[in-house]
Length: 209
Picture 1 (cartoon, one colour):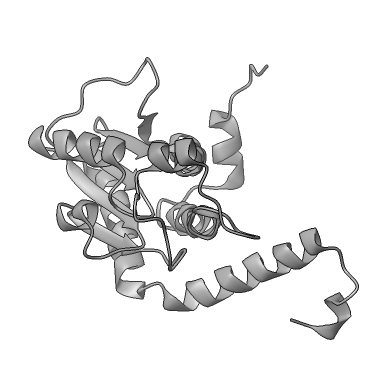
Picture 2 (tube, rainbow, N blue to C red; picture 1 turned 45 degrees about the horizontal axis):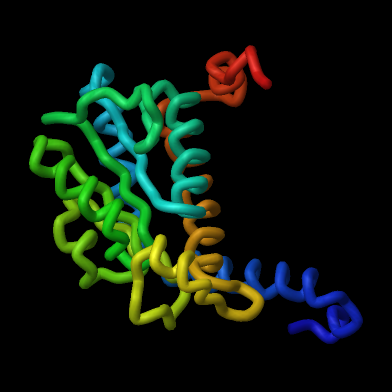
């Protein structure tokens, strides 16, 4: 850490540490995995405009997923978020994006398995290539995150037990890194789909709370 930050409060030092981690993670993410995800979304948009994209994640990963689903909507995709009351049936030729750092979160794994059984294609974003979620995926993107986690990996169980870690507790590094990664996916999709910021603005909600 730069000596110029020595007198900074811990909150700002933590911001710096997280930003440094994301920079290292950007170099660690496999370019071929990112390219495969982008191509999958591009082809889906161009060849399956009536198809549905369902984004799923638990807890904070779910919030990251919501932000990504919103951008997909702005780009012209029929995007939905698992857990909302307006989610339609998912079936053949649809696409699912599942976000889980451990790749073992029961809620997400069960939903992903159901989507696969219905004939949808699965993009998995996780830190573990050998996790159950990764193994059933059609497209895998490995996002570095926390390297040590509770023996009990289920999100809801960790919340109930109150298991935390200092500075960047639970899945903070994975969630923050995934958010930035997905923003990068959106940026490249804008170019590939020839979308301008004005195009996105026209689709943005014009009635807001």
